Length: 472
Image 1 (cartoon, rainbow, N blue to C red):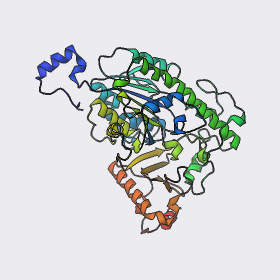
Image 2: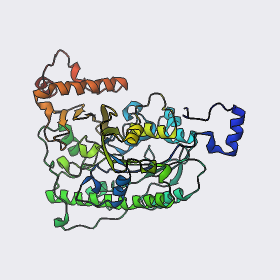
Image 3: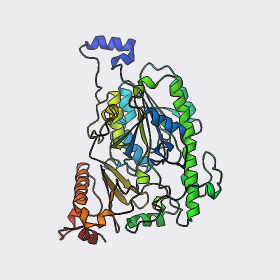
C-alpha cells in the first residue's frame, strides 16, 4: 500500500521526528474527511427528490440539493453480505468467495480492507451500525475501524453525531450503516418490526401499484422457482393487489423513518462546520422489489433491486444539485473512490474505478466507464445471475432455466416489460453484451455452472431463436 502526495525530499529521520510532533502532517494536509452513510434495501427512487410522490424524505433531499446525484448507480450484488464485501474489499464477491451471506472474510483480504488501508494512510476510522461481513457488528479495530455503535438504528445517529463533534487531529473516515428499510422483510412475514411497527393504513392512503406490477411472460422462470421454494423469504405468493399496496405504503414509511435518523447526522455536519473539507457519500447496499413484477426482497436482478440511490457531496458543496447519468458501481467503484480521496494506491487485483474526477468535473457528457456489472447468487438454491448494464441496454443472464437471457432498453423500458432478447433485430447488441460478460468472467475467473451461450456442444448458433431453443 502506498500513500499518494506524501511529503517528499525530506530526510527520513527528520520526517519521523516531524511526524511524532504532528502525526497528521506526515501526509498531505488537503485530504478530506470522508463520511459514508448507507441504508439497507433502499431502491433508487425511494427518495422524494427523484419525483416519487409516495414518500417524503426531506433529509435525503437536503443531501441531493447539496451534492451530486448519480441516477445510474448499481450495487455489485443485491444481497447484504456480498454487496458490503464489494464496498469494503474492492473485489467482486464471487471472485473472492464472498457471494452469499455468512461467507467469512478470506484471511488474505483482511490487510486490504478499506478501513485498514485508510487507517494506515493516517485517517481516524470509525464504523457504526450493521457490518455483516459476516458478523452483524464490525469487530473493533479488526478491519481498521473503531466500532462506535452496534447493529441498531436506535441510537446510531446520536453516536455518529457525537463522533463528528470531536476534535480530530487527523482526517477521519466515518461509516454510518443503517438497517432500515430492511424491516420490510419482517413486515412481509407478518412479524413485529425491530424498531416499532408501522400503523396499518386505510387502503385509500396507500400508493397505487407500479406500472410494471404485472409478471412478464418472458421473465426468467428461475425467479418464480425461487419464490415458490423459499416461502419464508418471499411470502407474497398469496398477496392481493391490496396487500401489495399496503406493502408499498409500509416500505415508504420505513424509508421516511431512516431519513429522519440521517437528518441528525446532516445536522451534526452543519453544527460542526464540516462541509468545507468533507466528502459525504450516501447509498444503499441494494434495493427492494417494492411490488414490481410481483417481487419483494432482493437477489433478483430487476432494476428496483439493483439500481440504488447514490449521492456524493463534495467539499464546499461543489457542483451542488447536479444529476449525472454516468454508470457507477456503489461497491467496487466506491472502494476505489474512497482510496482516491484518502491518497491510497489501489491494491493489486481490485476491480473498481474511482468516480472522483467525474464528480469534481460535473460534466454529464464525460465517459466514466462503458458498463457496470452486477452479480447475484441466491441463498439456498445458489442460482447465479449477472447483469451487464451499458449506457442504453441492460443484459441479464441466469445460469439455469427458461428465458434465462434477457435484454432491455433502459431509455424506453426502465420497467423491463419487453425482453428484446426474444427479438432477432437486437441480435447485434445482444452479442456485444454477451461478449462483454464473457470477457469479464474470464478476467475474474468466474464461470457459470452451465456452458456459456457460445459453448453449446455441436451447435453454431446464429440467431436469437437458436440461442433460445438451446436453453429451453
